[in-house]
Length: 377
Image (cartoon, rainbow, N blue to C red; front, side):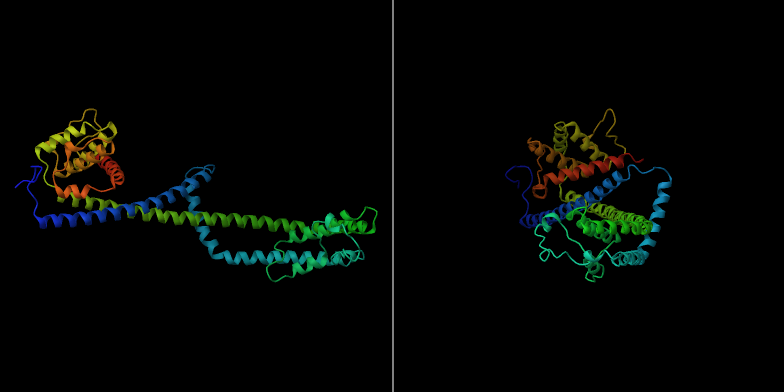
């Protein structure tokens, strides 16, 4: 008995149920595949973005055979520096503490001067009736404040000896700014500032040396971070390669699952499929030819003249072409009725909302076919 279309026999109820279950399982597999591909795509974009930025940063670097050797040396040095990082940090802290100790000697010499008395404690603005003091002086400073900050244990203390130097200068410059040149306090501040600068110049070479050393260590730390990121993204790229291979295998399994559910292509179907191919754009036609080349290494899809014998193609190739042409014509708004699938199983398997994703999969499939077709048979 034929169905209402008069094309194929009616399908038994149990077989219909089996087909529906198979269709549902296939749909779930496709959804899982789409989700996995989306995740891989996000990770791939992250890796590409990283290496794109890295290549821009390295565009001005010297090129040549020594780059690889330099990179190997950097990685080896990076591992050693990682092991010594805490030791270097502690050593740097000790060197800065030593500079601060030597600076403390300078402070004692200045504060022991007979003219240092006015600068030892905060200015008694209220007691001296200096009503405009805070309008003139933005940041008051004195030696007791400096001493307390140098001895602070709560993390609020000075981190660098230059910070202390700046506050000492501020003490005297505040006094010179608020008091007239002929005032005693102005003269005293100017004199002590000169003495301080002389003593600071004696310590300055050691400070410069330490700053240079710190800059070199900071540059090394930045390079270490870059190398660590490169190692992380290199592993990500390797893992992506493995997972993409797995996805490719799963796609092949899904493809075979579909083909096993499809009926054999009739002579009339082959003719209709050949006619449908003529409706494709040049770009889509090239993709279709690459699908043929996937299962027939001898077929040359890029030759000047291409002869495609539909009767010589395998069932697998014909169904792949059928699915591809259906989606292309549907996306173009053309009626794919001339190659309509006369089988409930196939119709159910293909009738879903993943047309865009399937087109992307076809693009990938066509590209992989192109690569394979270039290999010697």
